[in-house]
Structures are given as structure tokens and as C-alpha cells.
Image 1: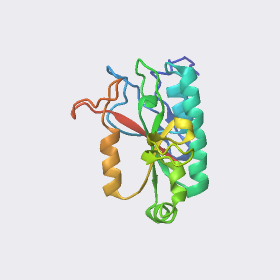
Image 2 (image 1 turned 30 degrees about the horizontal axis):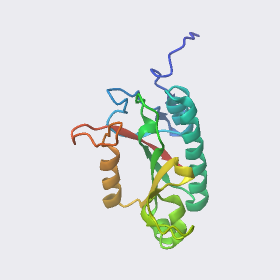
Image 3 (image 1 turned 60 degrees about the vertical axis):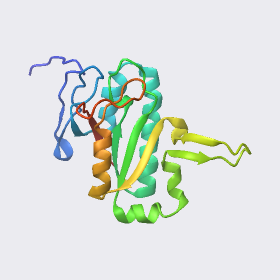
Image 4 (image 1 turned 45 degrees about the vertical axis):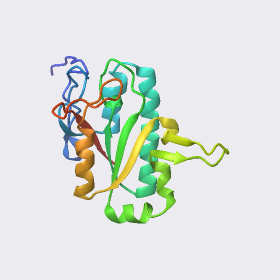
Length: 193
């Protein structure tokens, strides 16, 4: 039997159990992004690739802990769902990530049941809201779940909605959050819960 070590950033892992899947591909380019496409991953693979073997580990640990807890909450609430994970967290950029961007894709029936009430709001990034308590009545640009570590959206598994997010998650932003030209594309991750 031959044993040798391959650096984690170059490693291609094939999972045999549970039907098999390929590990996260290497990041590349000026912005350290994934190749174009939606890449299957587990939370454990995300930890290895984007926390253990990525720059700014301390910040990434915090974001990952929030992501893992968010995934647990989603499973408790929806039974099962798929997370599309994007943003600076799933890159190897030269600056630290602020948060991770997550679209939670849920079956249409569960979406209709859950998101027909305000209960769904706790899983979402809220934008342009007015705050009544404390009595500032000031507009708030954004309120994100998990102490701002998750930028989150919930959508039904309807192709009309998922196509919009697939397009959006494939776009690349610079350090100042400016979108790069349409022909500059990247990939993102999919975790089935």
C-alpha cells in the first residue's frame, strides 16, 4: 500500500459512501473564486476548504459556526432543504469575508406554509426596514440573521426563482462590493440538508 500526502488545496476527494460526490474544486483567479457552476459539498468539506485551508481563519471560524447553526435551524424548521452558499466566505480572496451568503431552497409546499406568516422573517436578510423599538423610527439598511454573519434568503424550489438566484450567485464583486462585468463569472456551493 502506498501512502503520500497531497496538500489540501490540491486534493480531489471522492466520497464513496452515500452515492459518492466530488469535493470542492480549487479556487483560482484574481478573486480566488470557484469555477463556474453549482458544486455539491458537505458542511465538513466547506470547513476543510474555507476555514482550515483558507486565509483569515479566525474570522472564517466564526462565520462557519453561524452557518452550521443556521443549517441546523433550517432542518428543524423545514425538515429538509438545500443551501446555496456564496459570497466572500467561499473564496480565497486577499481580504477577509464579512459574512456568507445563503439561499435556502425549500419545497414549494413548505415555502407556502412557512413563508405565509412572519415566522419566516427570522431566516431572512431584511432590507430597508423601519425600526419602532427602540423608538428611533430610523430606517435600517440591513438586518441579517445570526448576528450579521449570514446574508440569507429563502426561496421555493420553483425554477423561475432558482434561476434568478443561480444567475445572481454566479456574479463576482470586488472588495468594495461593485459587480464586475457580466462575463466575469464564478461558482458557488450546494449543500443538501
